[in-house]
Length: 59
Image (tube, rainbow, N blue to C red):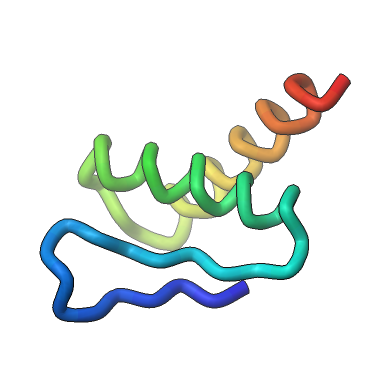
């Protein structure tokens, strides 16, 4: 999983060969940006929530 933040305004690139992991990262990152509270415990919680969302969507 690669997260690339460059000079492009308001853009973050998420790169991964695994589409499920990429979608989990995309959802977690979107929630983090909307919420604005970015710290390790919050990241772990949102990744877990995103994993559950993706699992439900795949079923």
